[in-house]
Image (cartoon, rainbow, N blue to C red; front, side, top):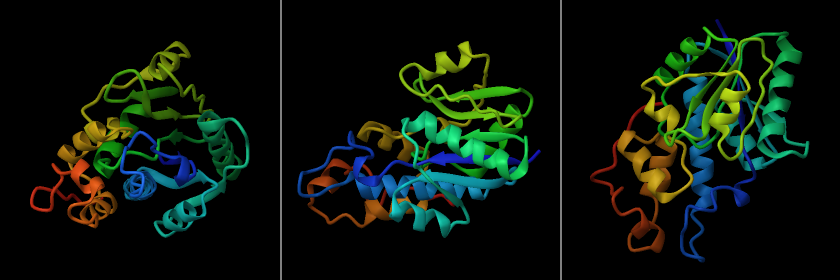
Length: 228
């Protein structure tokens, strides 16, 4: 079974505002782009994925993910994350007809192709399915074997998706479940193994900078590396 995967990415200037840095050292745009690059690279490398559709209106994101082989769909509709997912899913079905479609957030820097492959195999057994995030309340992977993805992202989205009839999948896929909104999330993702783009952004931060001090546990001699 081959899947299309939709990855919505908001404008970098508006992304990851809870990743605090010094006012004169903006940390969130560079990391948000790195997260998206690592997420998309892992999805592209997944054997069960035939098409990757990134929904965004950020030109820097568009250029970066296109280099990985993703298709870019302009995010022109109002409605936030849910509307972006619906738009991407409709685009996929419009191209290839009804077929399995999945949605992922763009902030999974510890995601690997193996974890996503295993989760999609589990999702293939259900008409609708979702993978909860590490807290158990949010949602990372959302799937529909017909392509009729029904996003309910927002507070308590795991409960919302379950209430809508989606099967909850609780496999051992930590990199798939660990999205990153805060510094604590990033440190947890680091322990799992960050992707190369995120690793490079952190390694390039000047020694002694406020941003680097915030991420001191992720120092050059301790930073793990794993291939996408």
